[in-house]
Length: 180
Image (tube, rainbow, N blue to C red; front, side, top):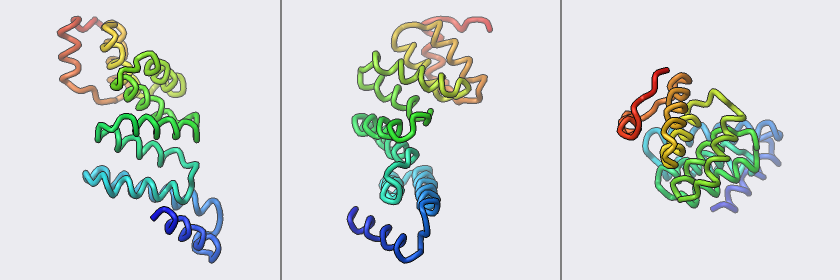
C-alpha cells in the first residue's frame, strides 16, 4: 500500500498534478487537516491513514508525526505515541506540542525523569502554551509537588487551557488551592 501511494505521489510530481515541493507541502498539510477532521469525528483509523498519507507526500512533515502520536496516545498505545512524538521533534525541533505530549506520554509510561525536561522544553519554546502547563501540572502532581502543580494549573487557566475538574479536585484533596 505504501509503495503504491509513493508511486502515485511520484507520478503526480512527474506529470504535473503536484508541481513542486511547495505543492507537496500544501498537499501534506491538507492531508493532516483532513486527518484531524476524521479524528474529531472519532474515526481513528481514517485519521491515521490521512496522517500517513501526509508522510508519503512529505516524510519530513512534523505535524503528521504529531497527529499519529496523538491518535496512539488516545488509543493508549504509548510506546508508538512516544516514537512518533520523538520523530516529530526530530523533523522540527520547535514543534512545541510534540514536547508537551511526549512529556505526558513518558510520565504515563513511568519515565518521569525524561518527562519533566520535555515539558520544560515545551514551555521554554512557548511559555503561553496552556496545554503544556496542564501536562506539567500533572507531572508535578505525580511527583507530589503540589505547590508547583497549582502554579501550573493557574498558568494553564490564565492561558485559556482546559483543566479537567477531576484533576483540580484531586489536587485540592492533596493541598488547598493557594491564593493568587
